[in-house]
Length: 327
Ligand code: 8YV
Image 1: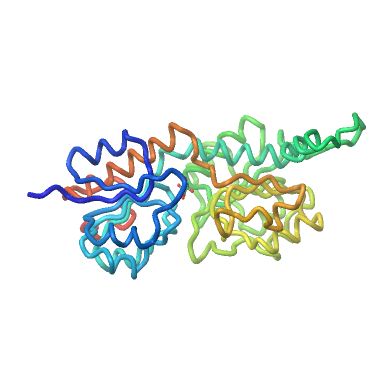
Image 2: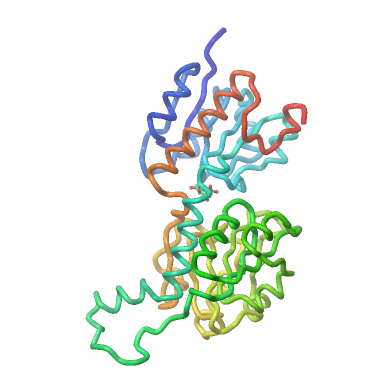
């Protein structure tokens, strides 16, 4: 039997490629930062039995049309809003993701953004670098206390729960909003469930960790931001479109909320002249939630294991559409 042909759309660690090479013909797009051009992606997918994918390309119906042999798209991310899963499922094509391995790393980054925004770390560094530090004064660079404050987690899945565990060390009161209450999580960290509006009114820190779905797109807009405290900090470590960026800009510019820490944006890479980046109370990083050497390697390995399983007739561990494999 011929070895399955797989395409890997980004440069990934050798450890992951070696897993695929045990049983597959492996083709890769081997440029570190530049994504594979669309034409080349189509050319490769035309003959591929499976693909290891990760943004920026959207894997949609037309692309699937161009990939008649492809039985599996193994995403190297926990979020899979870059893939039209309904379309894949309709065609009996498997989609997998990489949950678990990035939980703690992403929670670290979300908490780092929370601390940085509350204590004005980025603004502080700029103040020094730009020669604007003239000396000490009682209310110079004053921020908001994290220790003992109230945290509101919107989306207490794996990563949200990991953020809550960190918050316990800061003696924070923990509120959360989910599609449905999670009694085990409440018992574990003493978290209290709140409807979204109540959470927004009560929290000093609101951390967004929901997946991007039709229900969560635009979840935080002008109305929601107006419910928040003027001293509140918003952290988005989920997906850019969960927040209405125009409304967030106005809320931050006018002091309607205190600050924001952002790992994600509507359009990525975000343009350097994006209005949000002109605000001193925005701490922004370039979608690096899971970006540590160990975690990205683990994600690549897990995606490769899922892909290998899929193209060799085994059930991948992290199928997001199990119905294509008999439920
Ligand atoms: C990925 C992420 O690096 O896993 C996710 O959902 O957001 C990150 O860990 C990113 O999605 C790659 O595009």
